[in-house]
Length: 162
Image (cartoon, rainbow, N blue to C red; front, side, top):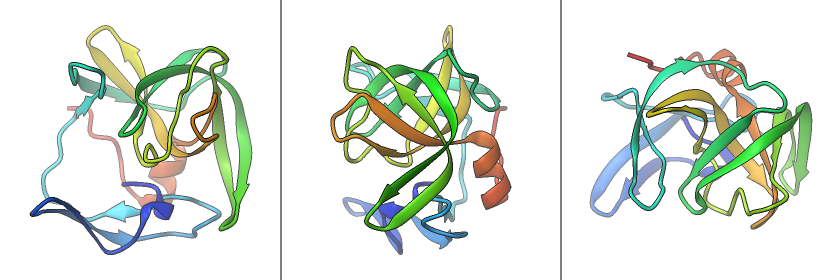
């Protein structure tokens, strides 16, 4: 899955076809898109300097006040505290609902290109899936994301944990 605003059609990286968007439920109200695919794993990569692989061992929704991390393609690994759930984000495409918001006053936690990336709770060498990025303040301290139950309920997918 990815964020619906990221595009449509076939996703490629160099000469390789990655996937095709097969369904977008109700953009912009829900900013999610289901991708076709045939091979999945329960690993995620922190995009930190060493591209640390973490096994996804659980999935669930975040709770206010805990530390979570965005593994963004642009901002790489950045961590924040969830401060609000049940939020709406509006831009020129319309308003996206049912979001949680993360905040970190001390550093940038998101950048253009991070959308669709995972939100995780790090636990030692493992990761617990908590959501997916859909918006943020450009190179800023706020990040909006759909939580796991919204993703699963709207796309009919689940997080592979074994």
